[in-house]
Amino acid sequence: MTAQIIDGKAFAATVRGKVAEHVTRLKADHGITPGLAVVLVGEDPASQVYVRSKGKMTVEVGMNSYEHKLPAETSEAELLALIDQLNTDPAVHGILVQLPLPGHLNEDLVINSIDPAKDVDGFHISNVGLLATGQKAMVPCTPLGCLMMLRDYHGSLSGLNAVVIGRSNIVGKPMAQLLLRDSCTVTIAHSRTRDIEEVVRRADIVVAAVGRPEMVKGGWIKPGATIIDVGINRIDAPEKGEGKTRLVGDCDFASCAEVAGAITPVPGGVGPMTIACLLANTLTACSRANGLAEPEGLTA
Ligand code: GUN
Image 1 (cartoon, rainbow, N blue to C red):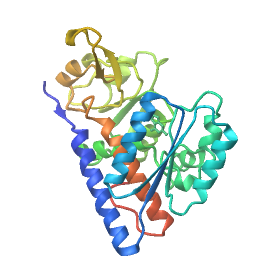
Image 2: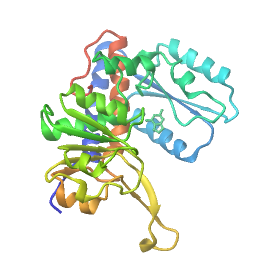
Image 3: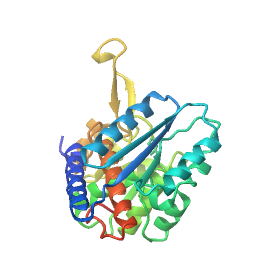
């Protein structure tokens, strides 16, 4: 292996430490405690794990955590009424509605009912538009975490060729916007892209966010390129024993690490940065709501 490992777990701990310092100062100097409300509808097991982890880390950095667990049968009107209440609650600076929602609820309608200033996921159409036009927005957590790691490793990203694989609203599209804002030449590749290997081979920066286990091979990678692997895929691991599984990214780690200059591992790469950036966004939202300076190095 030749690539340097970008340790997202350690980086995320540093980000959470910075957030905690700011929270201590907000409390001491202004008597303000940032608050994050997380709304979970239904009993999806993966979502329950995420929400528990978010709540725990929110408290660990000194913020208030408000968890709203609603039954799967919750009506759209009931959910919208809760969001309305959180929108007007001055103790709540960030609102996150855990996705996916049960099928009878309109996700776009629900997300767009959140006050954009409290939309710490950055999914509201106002924030999407603000980001796309280079204005001050709430930026989606996963792409923000990727950007922080890239800036830390490269310093300036200006002029670099970046290929984002995947065109989702949560990762691919906002990632491309952020890289463009940092003056990369950006290509978005996806399932219909022709000669995708050739496209990826031109990249100084590869961000893989397709949700296909180990799709990107070392032969696709330009020597020395930086790889940010957003994928978290659980696959069978018969080598570990009957019925065992393991987590892998969208990149084939072994072959990619032979060629790349730097790479994020799975697990321990992008994953921990997502929650750290959620906390950073909550701090940013709280600072803006109170007319205070934004935390340096924790925003896009
Ligand atoms: N479900 C999986 N990832 C996310 C995320 O980043 N935000 C929300 N709200 N739901 C998710």
